Image (cartoon, rainbow over all chains, first blue to last red; front, side):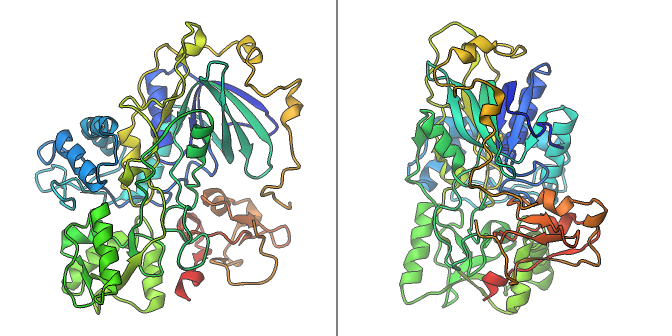
Length: 449
Length: 77
């Protein structure tokens, strides 16, 4: 369903959403709902049906701020502590304040969150202070549900186009993007009044210990392209010193995952069978505890489930081996390891960026606005701005699409910018004719056929 | 990007007897987030062209005929 037909070199739209993982579809959906007449284009380097860090699904939302369980203030404090203070509290607080309404909305999409016998959301405690982990029993339907909404709202979807640069106007405002077709290497220029950047973090920052370069812990398609584009366009980056190392199953490139198993009674242990981690939620402190234990004589470190009843383990397996990273079941099968028999050895991942846990990435204020220059001109470009949504990686449990919800633009974006705006703009790529952008000799991935 | 020319153990294995790519199906190619699958000109069946699997498994899950299997050879060694 590629709405952007091949051969086209320029697209004009009101709102361009870059990234079709989780945050992007949500942003595009919200934009279209807010301004039904607007031309909203969703750009994705894979296929929106199955793309982004949670292409398969998501086994839980680990930052659910549900009234009765937690408050936005408490959540903001929690994240500030977990990140050793490396976090911008305003956007985190904004996310937390608006989280519940979005959970309800997603629930209405058919993404059923776990509920208790009273019909209330069944939030579990994993973090230091409060309870924010909301399991998603049918989390494998997330992408399908989002895709359904996009189709219903008639958002234009452009698959297999990867944005490579944001285009800026003379005043530094974002005016669109350049994208390249990942199969044909054709260029596409997208002119937009508003750009919402929803690219993921940088999952392939570190080398996986398996030596297999695509066996990264974080989603390998999170290439950090969004960060780079924003940086080149003049936006600020924030909190990248809060990078991540995660506990994982040794030799398997997926989460261990204490968030799922913990509420059932599983825990992380050293070789003596003793707990050594104060709290399983990701934090600098937790990783320090993990590292210390590995370096001490008490390593290696294990995920302990073998004290649990077989049925309980079955429930954990039903989530861990089916929803988010189904290949994990296959890994254990081939390794001959079974949670019921003995503890499963764990290790630590390579470093990576995960915008959710570490609240890092492109700097945004509480309205998800970047620090790209704000226009002083009263013209049509006033509406232009970038808004950033961070896409979640497998470990971050859905913070993204809910945290940085699209804010209404200042004007109703129903008309397209006149050509004169672009052609008078020095920073637009020069083009005499559309064919100028058809560069097909690039040394990128191409089909032999 | 390395192109797999020589026979090697790649993660995604397609059962050519079950694959219906020659009848126009492109589901596995479409849903792969890393875009590593292609339809072979030779056989008309799907195969793993680029050896860059993340073991996420939409190809196996979404295949209408159950022709696709994702192995995880590298991580098992």
